[in-house]
Image (cartoon, rainbow, N blue to C red; front, top):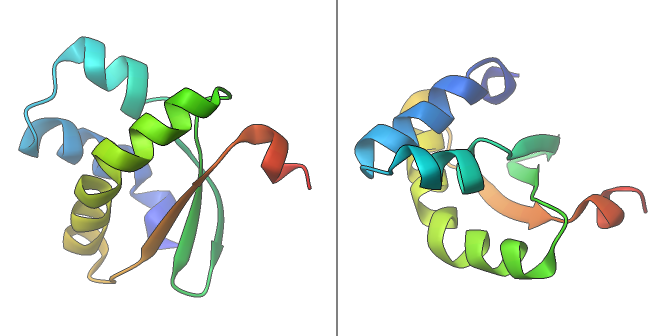
Length: 88
């Protein structure tokens, strides 16, 4: 899948286009991992704390969605999930 192949590029593009500091990038964006792509929905693993999930969803869902569309040419829906939800 192109999203998985380009994931690091996507994350770095978010950092550059939205002018994120290294601390913000390393804390919130860099740890994100693709868990699954199902149709046009991407499930992304967030850090294991609920507060982190809420923060990332609120602050970075749109930037990620925009950059993924720019890089891949596909408009994906994004859902962040916690590691314990991924096990279910």
